Length: 89
Image (tube, rainbow, N blue to C red; front, side, top):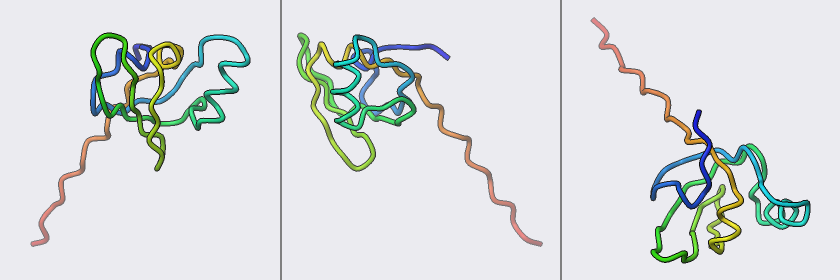
């Protein structure tokens, strides 16, 4: 899987956090916001020119500054293929 930062994630895409770049303080701050390793996030908005990044983590919506969002490294989650239901005869 390809690792990208949260700012590179396209709007509406679901991803899993695989790394929190930066020091202990950055990791602690992000963790307190609910952005922990293994957490699933969905990017909600795209702003031009290094604007804030809005994401949903669980039932919470967060707006992160560009610098903080750049430190959140994710992998895109592929949705499982839906199983086709078979008709009963």
